[in-house]
Length: 376
Image 1 (cartoon, rainbow, N blue to C red):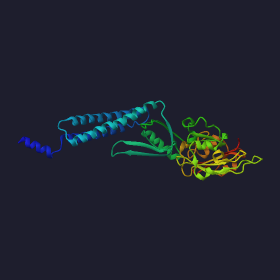
Image 2 (image 1 turned 90 degrees about the vertical axis):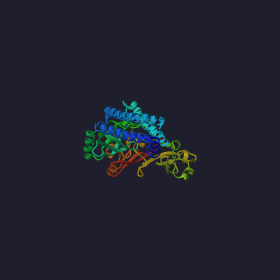
Image 3 (image 1 turned 90 degrees about the horizontal axis):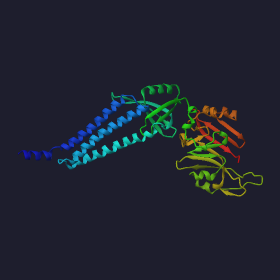
């Protein structure tokens, strides 16, 4: 009688192992939620204490996952197991291994950065508070980084309120953030009126980039170009002709008075769909193909937002859409042409064929660069 009842229960009832699995999953999420609310409520999100909090939180979650893993393994080895319960427990095992692995991996990868965390600068700052019901509040700062990516960092409530107040007084406020790259913990944050107050050593300046504008150089995608330069140097760095027909142009040699026949303006592009305009000439006696030409002018305009942050850097660490009209004057001094300055452009030159011309958008941010130099 009892045996028949048990068989009926096995056929029509829910497996105890399945119930256990569901209970463990519920326990896991309850544990995660409890840890989250407890740790969020501490309002410790920055510096070493913020990293310790992050580690503690991840380790606790890993322990909860380990308990779930052990229970799932026991359920799989149980003689009362069913196909369904085994599949569910295998899924639980996989998740209990993968999730803690990546959480702990990020934590350990950040240990080498504790003494020397990476630095980024953010503009277009946006501040927001995030909370779930009556739970603790997260204070977030978002912005566009000099690496061209959007970043989001969690701040302590006091720093958050101070930053919002500064932002209300200065729409162009810049944030200098030292952070751990894998856990995204902010180690130090400082707010600057503009990029002219940045620390040049924070920027990825190439050692080959001169310090003076008089060297007529520019850094593009970590490569430094100083005019005049051979066209082959640009082609070797991955730039290609936007119009393939330009590669077939033959430039005539100079005449007996060493004057070149023509100046060709062409557009180059690269694998990131960035555009670069150049003017090229032939300074040799014989006719030459385009690839052997001399680049005497280089023009970068960011109207299509091809470039971001540190993609383009001038001597002194000036960057498109990051530095302003005032920043340039503070770094380079008064321009050579006062009349052009009154029109919102800054021109610095050392001679008739050697000049740096900078233009700005309506908000006075640098948006185009023109470098010309024929001094061989």
